[in-house]
Length: 186
Image 1: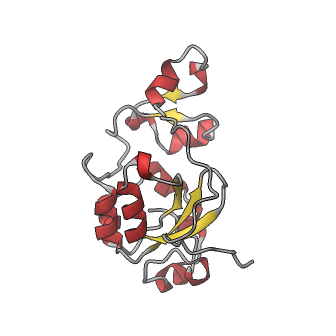
Image 2 (image 1 turned 180 degrees about the horizontal axis):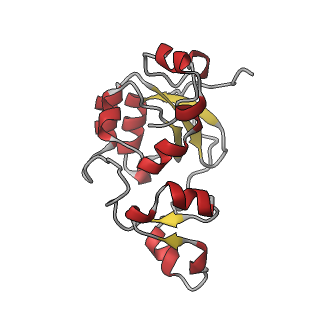
Image 3 (image 1 turned 90 degrees about the vertical axis):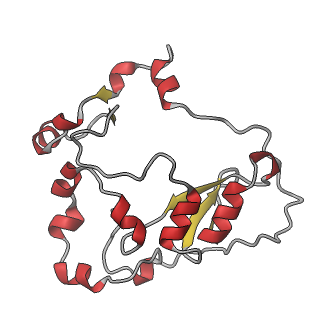
């Protein structure tokens, strides 16, 4: 089914758009400490215990929180990694799907346009955008990120998808029509 997408236009007339009155912050730690929150809903665990046997036994029925990455087998960029670094590693012309938070309307921006938006002070932004997804397999960014080891063991694309289709995908793309397999893994 074709996806109806709009291209981001930085010259768009925004006079009829409501201004964002306040931007809400979100702190996971604050939510977990709140009296309104039922803490037993989230299971805190150590990375060494998050293994194939755990996934088989518990079936990932509750959210998990890991305070340290040790034992997970993950790789992440340094804490000072920025959206500008993402642009340098995936390319400034790379298209990303974004959503206007107020209208829930999806659109596309180039990474260059998104970085310009993101680096604009919040008080000067006319809209609030969320990036829906950014697949970065087959880009320089893929070498800086590795998902938890146990995910490799249970991933249907890794374990069940025809190998010849995965091998045909040699270029980075977010365009569904050009994807040979569901590769949202990086």
